[in-house]
Image (tube, rainbow, N blue to C red; front, side, top):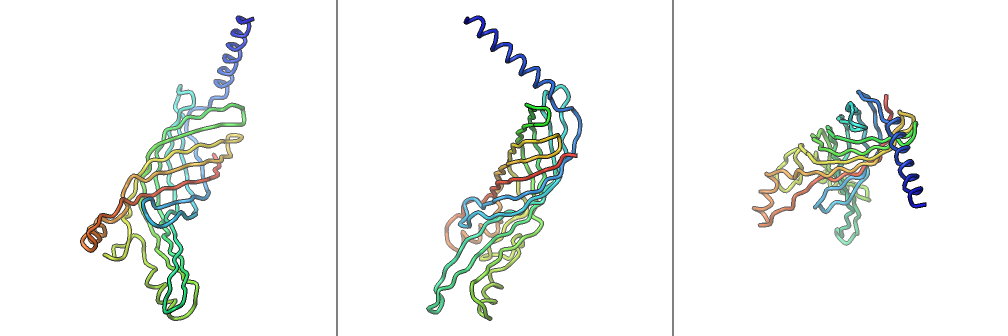
Length: 238
């Protein structure tokens, strides 16, 4: 009986491996467009997470004789940043406001991945690798919950370009960013993709001039602020 069970398990494993080989993705290049949403946060910063959008294009190359291993690179446009709620008492009146950083980046992800097809029409994959990004626009925006000339002045003071160097005490960021990310997902019928991913920024995005000016003004060193991003995207492979 024991020998029979061992033989049965071995037979099942061999059949599974043979099926996996039958369903291996074909080698060569494919292209994919993606679109979705993300939730980003400025790590070591008082602002909370905020939702945004992302879209881009990918090119994948399945390596020959590598049993599903592939290389992928792309170009993405993505929104990052953070937001927080404010409450102040001004001249005896409680005033609520929302401060928000909207940071727009072009990113180039470069990753290595592995794909496994458990069924003819279903593929599962995972990938990891670095990304490089440049900020191409964005603002810090302040919105208050009352109207009038005083409200307009407050909003004007709290609204500025996020990557422009105004000098202390206006807090802005450098444009360049880099980090590491991973993605897992599933593909149906060799075209339709659903993906989940995380990116951890490794670069301190504070400007050196702002950091130095802050230290001179307050005698304290600012923590390193880095981007973090979680994304859910759909894609179509051509």
